[in-house]
Image (cartoon, rainbow, N blue to C red; front, side, top):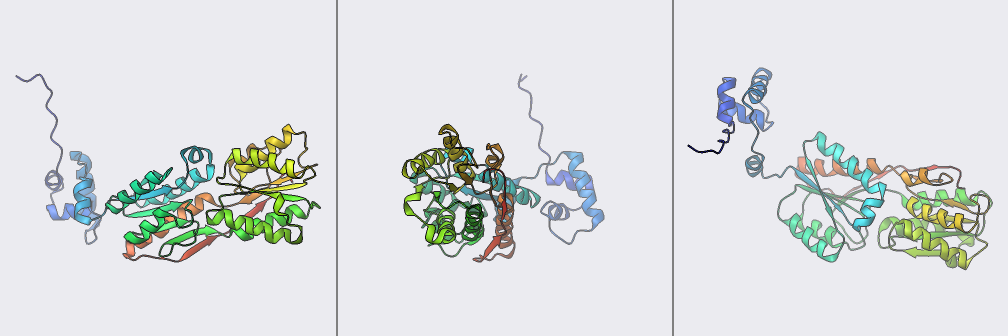
Length: 340
């Protein structure tokens, strides 16, 4: 006699049909969400599923429907910034809320190196996901080009230049940066610099463009420092450089709230009062903005809304079996606090 405990037999669709008193075909239509089933039959099947403990075979259903039931969220950022940037988390949660309602699984893929790009591109070609959402894409981003070539339903959060054939959802970074810089200048400051970042993508490039438009004749290229990532460390180093170049600097536009937080740390250590000596503004209205001392004046962008809109774009393409290439722009607003 075996000492091993026998595994219980898994309930099958035939068990559900027997318990419901209906045909296997009717049960199959209910499980697969197909129409042409009466409310009474649907209720009987749902009750029988609970009664017999039936668990649908997702793999088999995916083979039949030729869908995976999963959407990939591709994040083109280093691991350290993925954990540091609350905007990424908000986009992820917004995306997941929409996909969850549609019974889709979110698969997060992080690109931290060229090797990751190649690996993720091969994964996407394999049919493991039904659609793709890409955030933080660079100019001529290899993943974006690979997705466009595959022809899978997709959406960018942002609008990277040089890549066509993919829908996008974003904000008007130029207008938002111009508006907050104009508000900073309206406080009477004239020696205003910028800690720019991520100029290899549309958001960073456009925020610098908006700053230049707002400053006009006051623009001084010596008062602009550039860094590759929207990071707290960029704010620390950037503010140090600006103080060395212009000890009389009166205002700073930081390309993100994380950068602004780093700049505020340096100003405090240097004995410069904010906002009395230097006014500081950021961009995002993320958790960083309220952690700052004083609280940060910034641009509010709807990070969760961007994720939600991108998810809807992809689901709509899947439902219509058509690839969309248009864009959706969401509104931003200025949140004025004590830092300026």
